[in-house]
Length: 387
Image 1 (cartoon, rainbow, N blue to C red):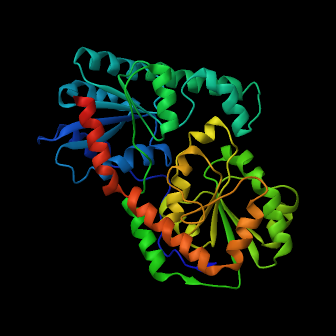
Image 2: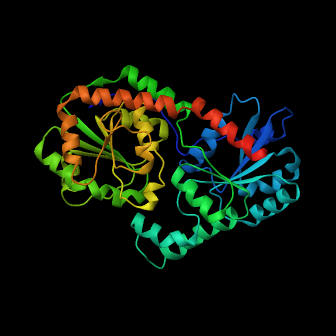
Image 3: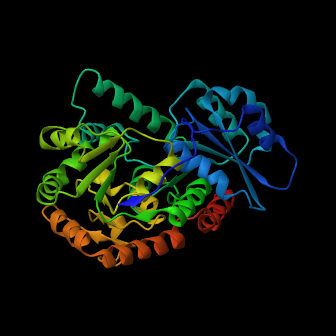
């Protein structure tokens, strides 16, 4: 484990600009093309990755400027439609305000984009999605997710272009809507990078404990975690100084719950995302177990680069996305069911291997997932959309 203390106080939810500040960006006179993002809410997950981080990546752009608004704020900005060059609906539900904006944008020939980061934009996906996240087919969950997916689809099919996070999702969106689709991956923001530099500078290695980290993010990863659970228990049984840290949502049962009571499982609920870097930076290995299905094929690589930026090696279930940039036993270790115990045990005994893979993951993260690295991709994508 690494000893590192987070002495700062970070807030949840995400702190965003006021409406006045966001509106000023929209109407400010300059030569930059104005892109507005429309969201149902400024959440700490999808909004952060797909809007907040995009705006940050384009802060130094000479050509584009991003501002973001809620669906409820559309009536306030719609009268300034002539100042808008591109409209992006980021995983936006249908509302009458959204419908009005689409109607006027089409009259004004403004390109409309739908940004989607999950395989839940058609009602066809709903039965598989409910099964995947493990919430059960109930009188509450079925209409809820049917409503969510149908509202996404209703907005998405009215759009002219699509932006998404992975090639897998790009292929699905292209096949379903038959319109131009672009990939812009998820990436880190400057706060994460700043805190990660502090972590690397100040943390110290404590060899008395070896901590396996699992950073679930949401309840939807329950089935993913179960694929590795038995092998984690075997490691805890065999080695008294191995601990498991879980941050996020995860119901624990049986022996893991017993280890939780003993202090061998360390559980924390969701923390602000800059603070999460300290949690990740304290562990010896990060695990990314995934059930092999279409929803996980669509998942982005954010769990890898959030660990990579603090030089923590990751053991990962093999998906098409991960095989595109992970070299096994170089910048990560691929594991199928039955292989997690041996892979983690190898890292447990080999400090040099841990450091080498962690350093390689750091290099990969800096090469692919920093805001400045994405700036050109974002600018080129919006240029193509305008042209």
